Amino acid sequence: GVPVRLGNLTEVRLIALKQRGLIQPGMTSVLVVLEPGAVGCGIVAEGQVLRGAVEASSELGQTWVISRGECVRLEELTEWPHLRDRVRRLGGESPGSLSAFLMGSGEEISAVRGELATDLGRALANLVFLIKPSHLWLTGSLVSQGGPFVESLSTEIHGHLLPAFSKALTIETLDNGPESGVIGAGGLILDLLFAAPVVRYF
Image (cartoon, rainbow, N blue to C red; front, side):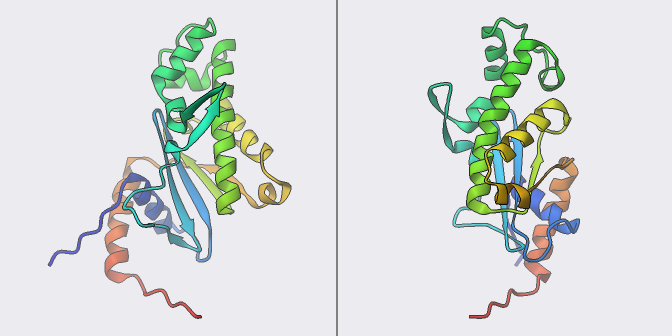
């Protein structure tokens, strides 16, 4: 007799945004979680979190892309060992931390950071073309510090969009940390127990 609702981290982060009032009725938006080795995606369609047929977030990281002549999954390009190895292969000193990679000014680090922004930017631009969101929220450790990587990524996304799509899109980074998981998990239960039914007119 105890109500149970399943949701993964990306979904509960979206629910937390709804609890904070950032998701408005009728809004179509996307939350992308960028972590080393993981690219999660949650979609809000017409103000409702899209659950789909599988109890999981949309696995954008499993998308196959062409990067420097190779066909790879998008999230492979964000793996920390891959990024360090790319810097070394270009002749640079391996960054000691993710922060050093994201904020560093070395030529090789900047080049690899630019490659990552290009690959992710193309993938996210394709997502915008399909979903047509008004907001693209970016969260996760790859964007949490802001700085040159986030600037390059935003520029890449807008650069691949048609003018109408670019004009309609707002890109924001969110401090969507661990506490959002707790808020979102509570929101799942509140929605299950107390949400007003959706009335559809045909």
